[in-house]
Length: 474
Image (cartoon, rainbow, N blue to C red; front, side, top):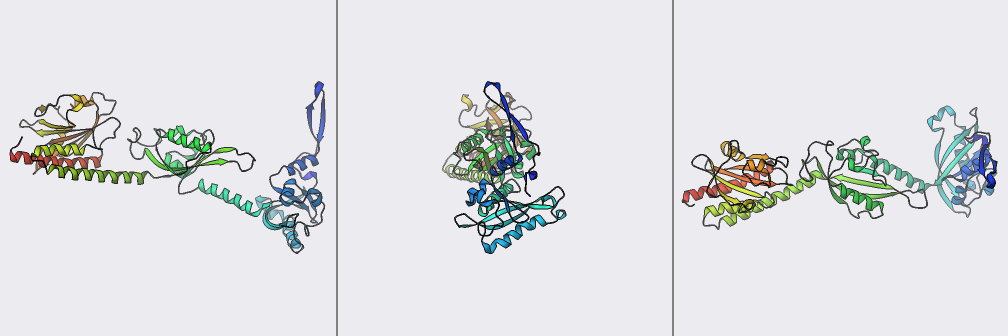
């Protein structure tokens, strides 16, 4: 029944020439039966076959290693009772196996009538083990049943394998965190939707591409973690990676840490090495990079910490200013306390009698090593941000950038200034002047939260200046 005709090979012999010494050649014949035996013995799954009478026709070496019964002991046995299964179970096991062969072909669908069953098989030493088997019918060319073949393995091992496959599908499916698989060359081989969204690309665009195509700043840290994982030394704890996306993959721009929030991502990452479970020696298949986008939470935490620090500085400055007998000294003291973590320079200009601005203080001291022109009018050109702040009574933000090397000089600011915030000094319904904060290269531009903090400082400075005028001091 299950003759060699059932193997998907031609019935004709397969010829192959093997070279011999002296340039002589001879051909040998590989029979279908020998090829079938080699294929069955090379299978990773245990395998046996039955004809329609329940007689064992095939038994491979994997089944021998799993249960202890040899092919000589198994092939030719009529039925499975008393050796492969208990006599009490033999009739039910035989029925479940052969009913697959007798099922109508039109009812089998695309699965070729394949069924999955669990059977309690006996080892040669008498031990009983639950096996998970896939039973497939064998039919002749006219569709008549010829028997079944059964591929089986330990039920627990099969369930573990299925759980692993289900876990892989879940990770690469709609998981609540990003998952990306990279091969040993650090090229993307699989990625789920959440990971692709966090990196600003589609999953299809990432396949086969190196991570350097999508990640700018922070790539060195990411590749280092991947390489250590491939070497068998993955990080023991989740690590925070701040990555900046490549230009064109998301909106915005700017250097690391200074771009808009959507450009720089904080990914809490874990790395898992992948090895082949089907070979004796561990073969590295790549790395699973699993991460969660914590950008919003991190930025919220950073914003809260920054606000606490600024509130603390305002409180410390107010207490220190209360001890100053001269209100002008108190005004300058507020500048010193405002700069840490906020700006590199601060300029204090008051409104002069001719309508211009007069420089009365700078922090820190003499800017860029030049002499301080305190008490002298500052020749700001028309439309200068400080003049706009005084005229409009609202904060004005300005950015020059590294591409405009003469921008700071044109505004009569230190040459290393790239971002400016000019805040009006208001007290008792009047504008007394302007307070200017300057940031240099490598710092982000001033935002609305910075402008709010600048106004808080300016209110305290303006109150000190107004008190100085009332008291008639400097």
